[in-house]
Image (cartoon, rainbow, N blue to C red; front, side, top):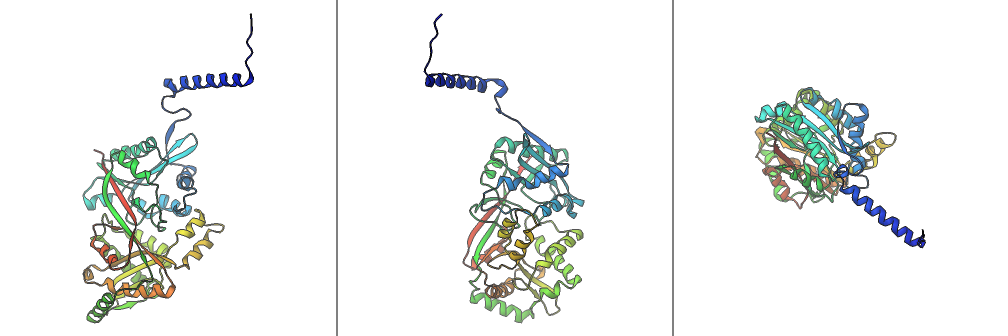
Length: 409
């Protein structure tokens, strides 16, 4: 019996052919028809370890993305486990894993106060992050939908927070920009995935970028002067307001009232939620870049609240307050180059009278004094006529955010 000896390179060629044939047989088999190596699994978040996996997943997903702004992990733990809103809201969290690796997350929420106020049976989803994979999206959304149906809901919308305070709205324009610290960032493919799963637009929010040193038009100055004279209005001191518990409570009462009719899907805050906001926000409000307008009885009429942009500082923190994160935050609070315009409004009885011109004039002067260069507005519903005020300035649309909704009957 003769034996044929192949040259060394031909032996390798034969081996490669054999490997290719084996791979083809494997790929055609029913066992490996879906995924070759592993499967996706849905895991409900219950343990502390799973909670931290849930919180930290976006940091890994967006590693190397220059626009992504990580949230502080400690803040996320509080929001997901301790916030007072959970005293009346239902929520569940899920992860999708591939082996031991997290590839997606979602939080399902039901706010009964929202449903009662707007006569809806809606669940909401948030903390929605995932790799670019429709199967992962189906598992996340499908799990949240099934839970919503079990609780008698007929619709689901999002991305949203429990109430109006948190991050909301999926980014649909402005992916090249860094968001304010209180706003979401997401990859463009998120929108493709949710629309493929049957979601449609419910509403859009717009954010504008404006040169902070452009001042205000002479027309606005004249209107502000006339209103101050006619109604005996003057600018108050936030430093004094913060020291008076009754005035702070009144400020948040006015906030509730002024946004109830003007803000889409607004949910008035409970006393407990107001207490949390007082503790977490008021200490950072400063007369340097914010303004309040009072009447002759020192009653609050209108307000404009701005913060230094903390986005770059939070990027340096990488989700951690210690050992050095707090230093970056402290420096960020002293950097006024870019400002986030957080809140502006008027008491219901003073709305539609041009009162905003007063705090706009005041804040413009303050921006010049601190050397601010840019200001970014908070998201405002595109159908709200209040967004027209930004057209009085040189501006550009910075970001567009979308809330999606789906019928799950």
